[in-house]
Amino acid sequence: MSDTEKKDHYHKVRMERKKAQIDASIARADGEKGLLLVITGNGKGKSTSGFGMVARALGHGMKVGVCQFIKSRTDTGEEAFFNAQPNCEWHVLGDGFTWDTQDRAGDIETSEKGWKVAQKMLSDDSYDMVVLDELTYLLSYDYLDKDQVLNDLMARPEMQHVVVTGRSAIAELRELADTVSEIKDEKHAYKSGIKAQKGVDL
Image: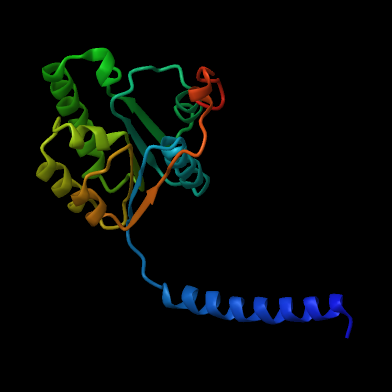
C-alpha cells in the first residue's frame, strides 16, 4: 500500500468514526422548543449574526420582530432590506450611543419605552422570532429592571425564539440562555483608522 493509499485509508476510517459520533449526537437531540440565544463579546458581528438568523427565519416563512435598542440611525442596509420584507417588523428604539446622549435619565426613559414595544412581541405567539439588538447594554447599565426583563423572556410563548445581542451580557441572562456565543476581535479595521463601511458596518 502506497503512502497516499494509507493516508486515504486512515482518513476514511477517521471520517466513518466521526460520522457515527455526529449521527448519534443528532439522534439524541430530539427536543424542540423556542430558544433564547445570546450573542455577546467585544468582537464585531454580534448584530450581524442576529440579522443572519432573521434572514434564515424569513426564508422559512416565519414572522420576525426586531427591536434595536441604543442605536438611533435608520439608514442602515439591514433595516432598509428587512423592513421591506412582509413578515418582518423592525423598530429603532434608541436615542444613540450612551457617549453621545450623555443623559442617563433620558436613556432610561427611552429604554423603558422601547421595552414596552419588545414586551408586546414577547407576549404575542404570532412572532416566531424576536431579535433584541443591543439589549445587553440596557441591563448592564441598569436602564431596565433586570428581573422584569428576565421574567418577560421566561414568560414568552413556548415556541418563540429570541436572540439577544450586545457586549457584556449579564450573568443572569447567560444562565437563562439556551445558547451563548462570545465573539472577540483579533483585528478590527477601525483600529487602523478606517471608518465604518457600507455593506460591512452599515
